[in-house]
Length: 140
Image (cartoon, rainbow, N blue to C red; front, side, top):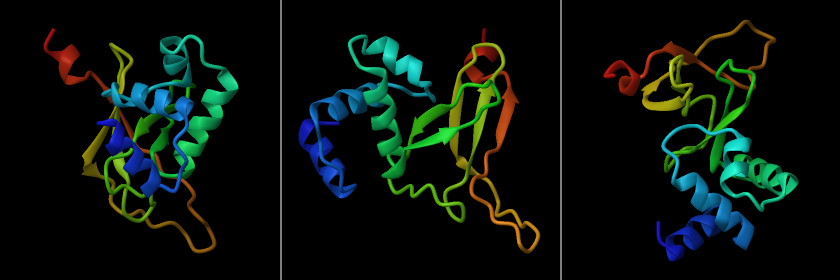
């Protein structure tokens, strides 16, 4: 994604583009799978942990990333696809966690059907993680 596309993208999200946000966003663009904050922190060695956390939280608020609880005890994040609103009604998809390599992948083409819950309950988050062996590890 070119610098001008990034600027337009941030503007469409009503988010000011700072040098730190750009650095973090470019790091996220290079990832094909979900990431933990420590993954980004290790890549961008000089970044302050608090700044990284606040930036990712702001990205989450603006629908740039979404959070994944893959059952490992470490919260992961993934970039949202274009048009994603992270809406419980429309944008729920599967996540796959490989038990061999430890990577978690968004399977955005595999939607979670709307789940009915009893009256009086209010859903705030839905997470469906399939665990097994990913296609890369299965070919080895």
